[in-house]
Amino acid sequence: MTDDFSITLLDSKDVSFVRDRGGLLTAHIQNKQHKEIYIYRTFPYSKPYEYISVRTKDDEELGIIKDISDLDRQSEQEVLQELRLRYVVPVVTRIASIKEVPGLWTIELETDRGNVSLLMRNVHEHIQQTPSGSIVITDMEGRRCELRDINLLDKHSLRELNKVI
Image (cartoon, rainbow, N blue to C red; front, side, top):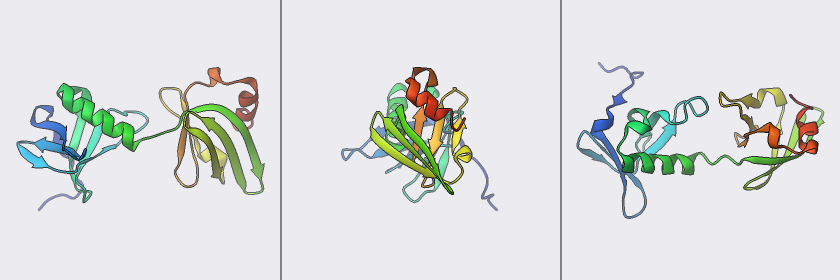
């Protein structure tokens, strides 16, 4: 009988990643090829490059990579590229406004990827400080923006941010 909650740690010596001609990620695990692989962070904020889940296109977990730096150089680069594609998080450059209307907060941000408007019911539940000191703001739909260093914000942005922290 197998345990549905068991975790398979993959030995970095038995795992490699390459891209096929179409650009899809392929994994070789213990000499078995797995096409169209997906990579997920299990601890996206506290350990972004450790405990990486390797899954099939059918969402079957093949195993966990303890630390991508233990992989061979090419495999590490392929996993890094996949993580960058999956976890696109705009970086906040300016806070245009933070407003509350009864029962709803609106945060208007300028980011490195354009203007973003985030909506949330309880603003304090949607603003988290990461172990690295950055702030991640997540709206009701799961969209995220990262404020990497509040010391780099202009005075207006700081005044707006002080409304909620």
